[in-house]
Image (tube, rainbow, N blue to C red; front, side, top):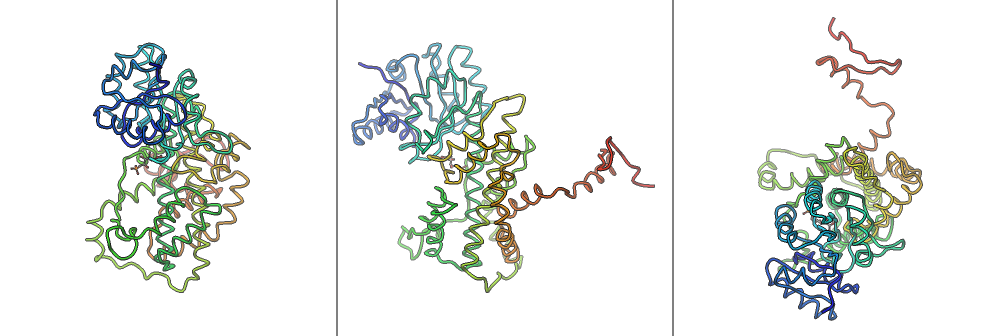
Length: 474
Ligand code: 6PG
């Protein structure tokens, strides 16, 4: 019997679909899962979806024995302990030169720890972020593998075909060494949280101030998706507004969904990392806080009668509002991506990592397949191609021009929202990020004075070199 090119362990939604995708691209694949039922389902699907070259195994030993050497095994099991447990079962059956790839959303230090542990046995290890949900996994995800270059050389011939394909190649690249693949996927998810929050704020303003119906919102997002905001998340948002309730109620499903956002936590890691690296990430942090506050549904319902918010501003020109919100959304998005990219760079430059990550190629592989895929990522790639050391995406000539042009609309939207009592932490946090970055002088002089006043923390002066401390109280 001929041997499989690759093996995949863990046949939940992502694993199953990725395995079928790999098989469809012409790579004979073996699959194994802890509970055998999923193996049989996957085999059945492979048969029904075009007699794909996929073989299922109930015994791990048989699975390992079916793989071409050196072996390539992709794991798609729940991050954390289940990954450790799977490695513990795999490793005794493997040989030096074999490769294990974790395709889950893993906390990057876990990947580095595991790479070290299995590396002692000569086994190679990679952490590979995979984005695109079920559909992406099946038809072409964006993939972010990190780990040793030799491991990448083993993986590349397969993933280059399995990943989404865009005008300038497959949406996969060797991200860098260590846990950098997981790291970049983590930041992708932080950006994903930011994008989703910004879109939700746009919805809130258009609905609450503009009085737009779901049909109108569908139209607006559909139109936006044909312009500079073209992206997967804007596209699905348009579709969401068109979806009628599926439980027999009048109207649209979106109006019956409880306003409480769940999460698995990668966005939280991003904000924790931003703080750890002293990188300002207000848009992503706003998105995370908004999820926390949304979670307090019962508390919010109980609090509502205690407060009286302002009346919503009336008499707004609807067409103007829609256009303003589009511009505010786009400008805020630039800020959010600038934060994400700067976090990736900070982590890359951390002397403990020294990952040497290339921001342009990271933007490139997000152009297709992943949840944040958007036309605008090509422009981000071009900005880093023009200047790989761009200190902030906002000051790239093209993005700076766009931010300048959108400022009046952006400020009108934030002002209108604040006056109407509508929270827009993503829009306003992004605008504050822009305003702080743009202003040559900030009120930080006063904070320094206070620090020196109560703690002799010292300060620098604008007019001469040196470190100073003052006798603040005569
Ligand atoms: C992707 C997504 C995915 C993530 C979900 C849910 O890139 O395909 O980022 O990996 O798990 O979006 O994330 P939350 O449950 O944290 O919202």
